Image (cartoon, rainbow, N blue to C red; front, side):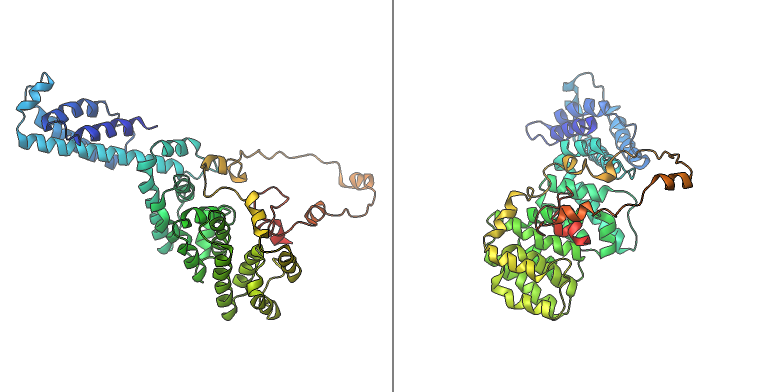
Length: 399
């Protein structure tokens, strides 16, 4: 926890205390300001803070102050000036500390910033608007044709979900609605791995946001896929019924078919399969007849099998889908390969080529273990590779 933030929040509490007269607010705040450890502030922040502290110091010199009671004699106009300066110091130092935490989140060193994440948690209420600003600034930067150098935007998404910061929804929607290439650069595997849970978390009170994402053909396909996946959580939480979800996804399917959008058509049918969608079977059959469906993702045999399982089959997915949102950003990210310690490469000496070849007897090529392990795996089941993703979104998409 930032000791500076704790100390300056105490100053703010004193300055805002209606039960204390102005002279007493100042008398009790000045010693705390004197204890504030200012080294480490940026040069611009330090200049602003020094200017306000100098103003307080110059005015205090005009009065002989030996005890708290002596502050009673300070002229009201001087009291007002010093109280305003004290508040300015508190605001500027706290803001500088929040910026420092964001800077630590922004470090691009392939390490999970555990300390910065924990510090952000300890100052949750202050960090929420700062993290929202990170997403807003990232979206503005991308619209200028630039990309951020660090990773603060990535961790901001996970932390805002962990904090259940509902006020962050507009900023989240803005940044994930950017063009496909920047979105992939900004969030990578989180789009196909965790975004559907984050969207579902924020859509509990605003289910229309999923419909808006799916309706916008400018939004990245994987983001729209995540929106379609999020509906399962809304059914589980009792926000929508299966029938309502099938009707919504069916509407988007019809729109995608009308504009000859095969990729979106395939994604929607893939998700509709979850719900044994007999109500819109004619549209699905038409999509296959017109060649709009990528059969590597979903085929008619699979869909017919889902129909035979019945309309309640989707409830099986409740057992393995993770919780809404990101309960713990560190736990969620600690096993990601990109955050693992890199093992230095060491050259391995091999025997000369000819003797090595003589040692190897010709053998029949082995049957791929991956193929064997995927037999009988349904597309909406967890992938056998252990990634935690659905098979259709992981190894099944590459077959």
